[in-house]
Image (tube, rainbow, N blue to C red):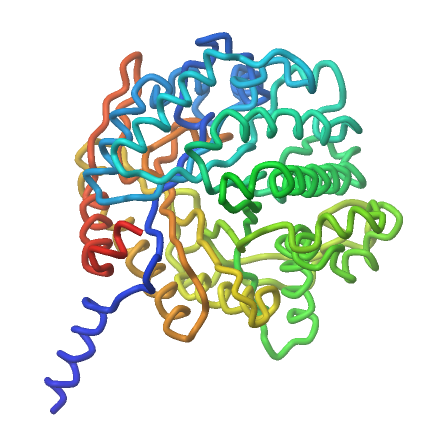
Length: 474
């Protein structure tokens, strides 16, 4: 009898199906893979400039060439086809499409032509694009001639750029994201201590206003013809109280979630910031007027989020609330039993399940809004090509995280997509090229080459095993 029960359980794991229309995909971002940093009249982005500063990245590299996907996009799309991946999340570059950044400035037709060629090839190969308008590559001119993300004209400039993109690619793209990980943009890009009291909140506010206005534009001008959907991509870990019996630790975990996910998801779904943020930040937190609240509330057709890790959270040691970190006032740590990725991020598969359940209870609330995991993956230590070809740790990570996504679905949560980060090894921001997230290895150099890893084939087989032929096409 025990043998029969074991075989039945094993069969259910192998043969279980995701819901019809579930999207298995892979994700990348323009600055991280395109290279061609000055090709076809592209202007530098803020990250192009930063990466060229001495010792700014961990390995001293810059994304000048990266995977050269701007020129080798057909190779990347062919890899998607080989993997059985029908859904591709990518971004287009603001600094490439509107090099001078400002509203009314010249559109770069060379960039429009190249992206059109990319979308044409995807269409030919049966790949559905999911396009992020802003994945951190602000045209540097906006920082040099103004105040960048805190500029009062930022939303106007972004709206102009977004309108150009909608108009240019509406025949190819039906899945849109305004911003990727606004929390990272607001918090981690503020490098000067003297600016941390107000600047993160000012940036976050500008991003939310720009998002709301962009969604409004799309819905009023393009959605009826385009018949697409639009939203924003949040990011968050799962914060657990270090001691669930300690009220202070429970409160710390609650604050951590509200000052990360809630900071941006509450305005998008409810129209305003979390009450705990308003209480603790006070006058340093900008306010939305009534019109802006109306624009924001419901300004996403789905709930999309990136997730990589989780943490144990306890009361912090800050004595005064003077900046973002002391406003949150938490200390995060790891369970010693948790394994770590090459980024030193804990591997906690249960975290993605518990996060999905929290999102469903707090934001979805019985509505039909679908949930999408738009990034999930790990950096694996791959010193040699042989290491990459046998990336067992990544396979275990994906297997266990996907099992917890499926668990949430089995419990009735409306999760409708999962995108692995990343299709390719890429420029990993402050880490340069020293960290590898791809299921495809990039051998960097003047002419980057691609080599599939073991995880590439594992993911291909997983997609095949978990979906019917009709669902794979959906």
